[in-house]
Image (tube, rainbow, N blue to C red; front, side, top):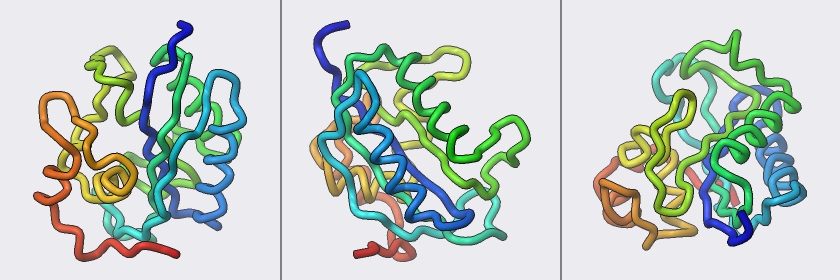
Length: 164
């Protein structure tokens, strides 16, 4: 693939120095062959979702231009997670994590393959992703759901705090 595709990646962490883990992940994304970081959101403190009895998360979204195919990009994200100390095999679903990187959008592609679902499932319902995504790309359309700005307006955001 030679023509870059615009992709969006969700970043989250709540174990250890979560803000530093997110910052390092931004650097890894920008420093990887086939990726160029073109925008990044503010870091946000958000309450845990799913399993609520755990520390708040730090969340953000990165916009990248990539020449990697979707599965290749996912493989890069999983490698960055592993290098940060995350082991998805032993992690509790929605539990605490040292780093979580999710492929949210890959151009306007809709992908439903084992281990790869784009747009990311429930992206359109989760404020911890919609708030940072709307900050950097309010006009982007989530296939099957509509523009990010409109979706952000439909979710409760009162517990989300921007870290400046």
